[in-house]
Length: 188
Image 1 (cartoon, rainbow, N blue to C red):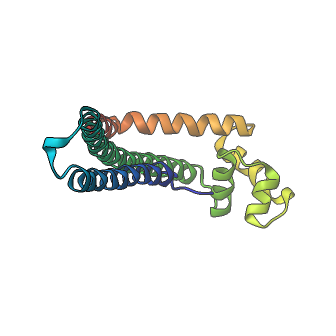
Image 2 (image 1 turned 180 degrees about the vertical axis):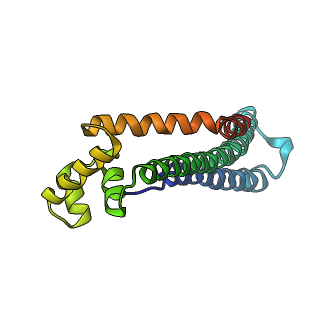
């Protein structure tokens, strides 16, 4: 399971777009300079259409430079937002893991039972849990039965409901920290 959100693709794509804009802007600017120096050395003898063509190219170059500037601004905003989102997810995940571990300790679960309860809460099937833990399905079922007894629940759904209730309770207890993080996220 990958715990790190995949945020590299949009940033990489944005950096590529900014780079392409920049390269196009440089080549187009060089083309304008070469055209002005070679073809229009004597500006007094430029035809109306040549002058119009040159003005259009200069306007297009200006628009391309503006696109580079705006794209750079968007890229850095995206990068900052992405980094903040990763920090926020990590913080939430840490709080959830802390709440789960506290609940597991309160129930007196063994390390194996904690692992199986966590995998079960994440939605893994009994066969998937058995495969992940390199054990048999019957062993996982026995552990789940004991977990349900210790948690005073009768099913995986009830276990998940208790764990979600614990998460919501732990978030309400640490609401100030969450509000500070949300305020910081909105400012970016």
